[in-house]
Image 1 (cartoon, rainbow, N blue to C red):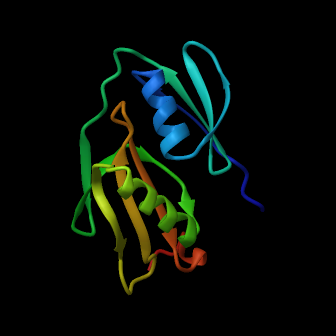
Image 2 (image 1 turned 180 degrees about the vertical axis):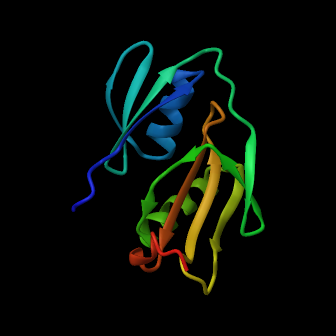
Length: 140
């Protein structure tokens, strides 16, 4: 079955900063919006930032491959070319990475390029890419 776009609604505490981050920095096309939410096209997926001026990010992490991976987090599995371009753009913008752009599980099933960072409201994002997309769901 051909994958369909997912939809994710998430809280943010500043719509202007959110618009700049997702629109200008990540390059997401803006869709519909109001004074309390904004639709974005995140690499073909619909994400909706909902204003919650009192939201506080959750601060939890689980160890994965020797790194503390923030939970919850969301993002997209990109092509390697898209991932490299995004990593370069984020580095040039001075992004403060939680986990720097790196290769995880090198030489193992599921080897992947990955990076973690926060949006202005403290939501954790992960963008990753596989050399072989068939390994996306490989267990070992």
